[in-house]
Image (tube, rainbow, N blue to C red; front, side):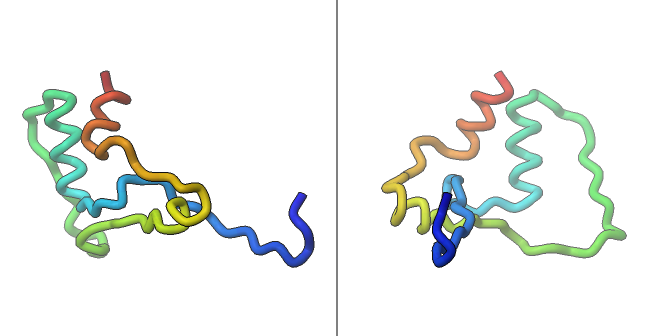
Length: 79
């Protein structure tokens, strides 16, 4: 167990590359060979244009670097 003065913070594991919801949907459609319509609920609030996890803490504390892209990771998961 950590001592009382230890600060525990999350460590993000990801590609470090930004991806929008649209880009993610397009990747998934391509990988799943989906060619149908894509409907967005435009009544919902608009979020950030892209989401990027900072992987700096993983680099600093663990010496970790991503070995594959988001697209290739999704491809492996889906196949």
